[in-house]
Amino acid sequence: MQSLGFDFSAGLLVAGVDEVGRGPLIGNVVAAAVILDPAKPIQGLADSKKLSVKRREQLYVEIKEKALAWCVASASPQEIDEINILHASMLAMKRAVEGLPVSAEFVYVDGNRCPDLTCPSEAVVKGDSKIPEISAASILAKVDRDNEMALLDKKFPQYGFAKHKGYPTAAHFEALAEHGPLPQHRRSFKPVRELIETE
Image 1 (cartoon, rainbow, N blue to C red):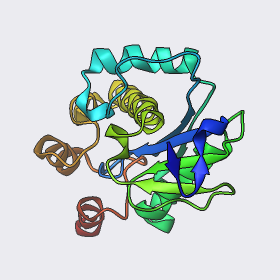
Image 2 (cartoon, one colour):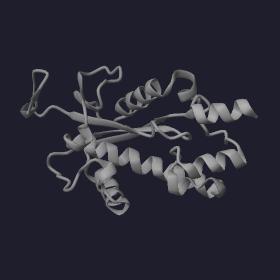
Image 3 (tube, one colour):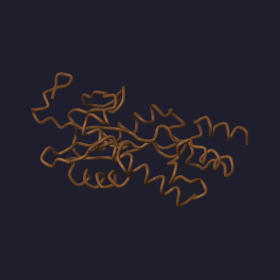
Image 4 (cartoon, rainbow, N blue to C red):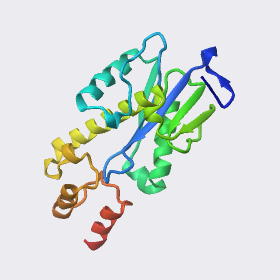
């Protein structure tokens, strides 16, 4: 496998990085970085969105057990409001790569742009279904963010976060209109901003 002139057969430490949670109106944007261990293959890695909840959770445990290194990081709603969702996503991905206990020598990034990293990187569109390291990262990020929404649902059951995961659904809009935004809502996102302005 070659990319950007790198010969990966030389045993380069390759990380995959992905983020979850750009679209929701609430909560962190969560990113994960993973360096897989070739000696411990993981079967069934795929884009986290295409896996069942049960399969994702099984792989989540397996990735953490078998990967050479992994890190989950995030950017907060306040950071999203301050620097916008795109820059916050890049920041979360940068934090995930920098938080790896083993330094990556090359990074594959899901999407069409790379965060500002200290090592070479390459953006891969739909990378979560093409590059195993990105698939693994997408699973860790998705499960962590879904868990964050489950905790929020326990605190504020009236919003239905366990079902819609904070995405802009009709049920979420209804709850927002009835109960108002929480501190964790992203104030820069139009539906939340407009609600605050009308109040």
